[in-house]
Image 1 (cartoon, rainbow, N blue to C red):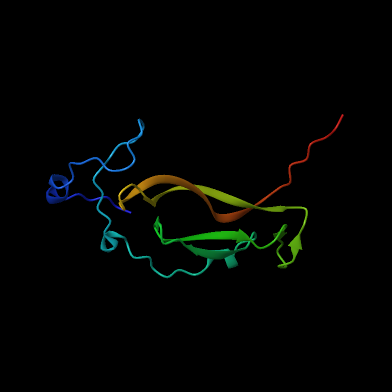
Image 2: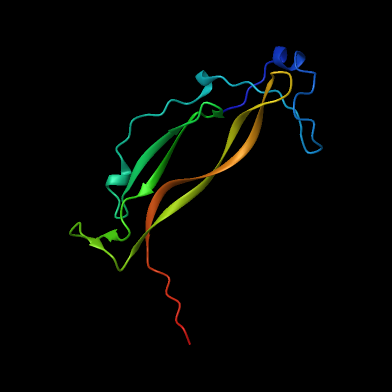
Length: 135
């Protein structure tokens, strides 16, 4: 998401909006889907990994972006050279924190956007298991 403000948008935005909490700031915001970089089709790397995953897309009308893709590890172990699952290794998710805008109802039938962070799974990796020896 790229942010862009025109002079016209800034001039018309001089009243504070909900909420008016002490840690709240109001900023001009221009959401234009044409500013987004189009994604190109690429082969699914999740199917070619030794720690494969599947992709699930969620849609939330009150969130920007409305569509977010997340992955889920397909195996507990990892694939060996023969393509069989090796349980001496573990598939683990790779987490990434993103920022989203949440559309929230304020007072007098007005909406405002609240900035939220969301942690999503973007891939899986193969690791050796953590073993703790007891004394």
